[in-house]
Amino acid sequence: MPLALFALTIAAYAIGTTEFVSVGLLPTVANDLGITLPLAGMIVSVYALGVTIGAPVLTALTGRLDRKLLLIGLMGLFILGNAVAALSPSFAPLLVARVLTAFAHGVFFSVGATIAAGLVPEDKRASAIAFMFAGLTVAIVTGVPLGTFIGQAFGWRATFWAVSLLGVVAVAGIALLLPAGLARSAPASLGEQLRVLSSGRLLLAFAMTALGYGGTFVTFTFLSPLLQQITGFPAGAVSLILMLYGGAIAIGNIAGGRIADRNPVRALIGLFAVQAAVLLVLTFTAPSKPLVLVTLAALGFLSFANVPGLQLYVVQLAKRHRPQAVDVASALNIAAFNLGIAAGSALGGQVVEAPGLGLSATPWIGALLVAGALGLTLLSGQLDRRQPRPVAVPAE
Image (tube, rainbow, N blue to C red; front, side, top):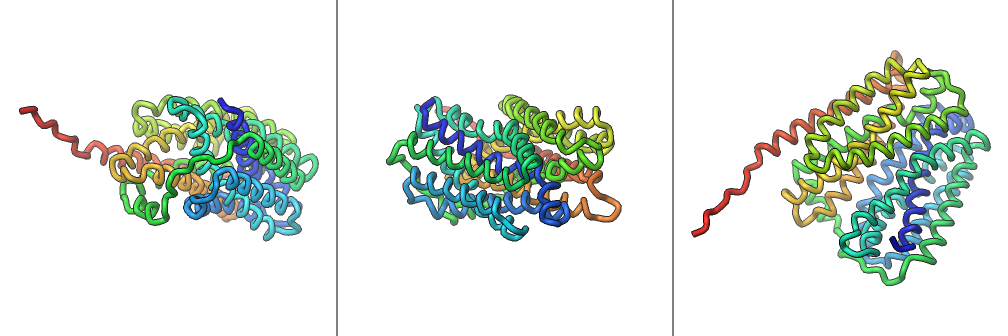
């Protein structure tokens, strides 16, 4: 793999860390700013919403810019956003900072995947993209627990300063290692993106993505306070548990790709069914320290195992229903993942402060969302079976 890919991977690592590290920082942020946990949870949902909206719109608007300069500018915006977060005197500026950072996130992965593929021969393009996205997975395994530890030891602002420093390293790597004059494909217009949204089959798949991926975030967003208040773990143990969870995510992501290779719909049906069941079980194992660790390991494995199957299925559907806009459909499915995060974390906040529910209810509420994704997947699979097969014309 060319050295330029390492620069992209470092940037992906920094972006992945800043996206998910806020989960471990929620109690610290809430205490420092004097706000409730559900309100603090908005730093997760607003970020995801910023990626959802910003990725397709800003990718279309920046399609004619030089690729290398665009990446440097995006990482500059990333550094600025995290610095503003670290300097925020109150909650409102913190939210603005999260939106700024989210805009950089959405465009970076959209553009970065294309650049990574263009840096290698055609037969290594998938590996190059996977190499870049490995930075995101490694961030969940190491960056999030480490960022949580820094935030608990030195304050949550120190975590955002540390992530800003990662951004500086990424900018230096991009400037030094990425070649100039990178080729760029014709940008997808907003009109093309809207045409993809006119396909009922693709909208059904996007809903599967949002519910199936977002269901876990009803609980995951508030995992740190749940572990402290319901299970009884000390704050210092949370970063270690997040490392366990991240390791399970990394394994699940790889295994999920292999499971979904042959038949993504069949794989998703099984994964969603087990994922909903594990979330439901977490409702009852949360008060037990040994049992909650086992349950969270299973949940971590399942929460990302559905990602490859969902992305592959959307591409397959786009080839059948919108063959001129496969890349656009793929990008919009990334937006659907983040819409699921935004909706799941926002719903989790409502559950936490609802009378008669609270933190302990977030797992079974999340299970209901995943069960909804399971129902949509069964429906989509049934529609696939009704799809008329091409009739072979006998040779004359």
